[in-house]
Length: 301
Image (cartoon, rainbow, N blue to C red; front, side, top):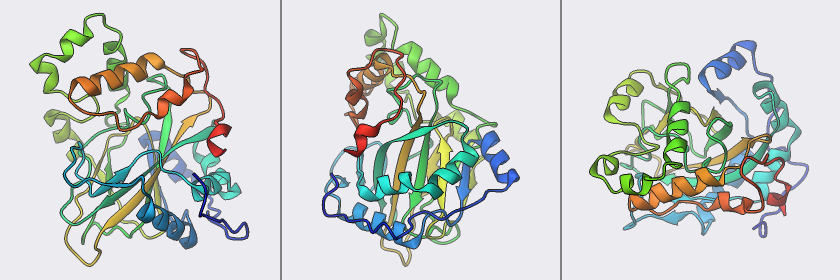
């Protein structure tokens, strides 16, 4: 997993940033925050080279996928990923926003080419389907190309959690997975017209009118928790041939494992004719239902 990528320990990958009380409060209320100049140019360059060259980030031409991407890959990580997490500066910034210990779980690489739309309004059910619905997880979205909302765009739109959170949707799906007659229900037309992690037309209407979008320079990132609705912004024609991004997922170290939720979400996914995008949650097969996951030091081996 880590070969062919040497990290010079003298090169800083994360800048030391002190966030204002206003920004910390915004994150507490909204569930997301843009952090300017968080990663160094060297860090972004290494991530860009990694995503561009990774065999796990696959061309989606001719393949079914619920999002409109050129390439995408789950469970993509390397030494750069872990060096960022281990940085004192990374931990300094995270500690200003999150009052509990977090641990890295997954890396995901994306690429959009002109006229690709990415994901519609959704939340990260698939990436957090192995922890209890109310337990928190986070995504650090790292654009590897500049984002200009008035030119090619290709960024990410979010809606503040205080306006509309998806916590109740998590809980609803969790309850659905435990019903004795759920398999029969999954075959009905009503269910086939519903998506567990994508917004309905009614929700789209509200989300579009409350969205926040940002410009991003190289090194800027967006941190958001799992209860935030978000969508990709279409990548338009322009000077850039593509827009790449890398997302790092984290969970609260006190998050509890749920094989019931994991199996249930995958069963729903398969019933709707889709394949599971990742089997990451099954790495915890030695844990009991409700057991605290804790630090994932084995991910670094």
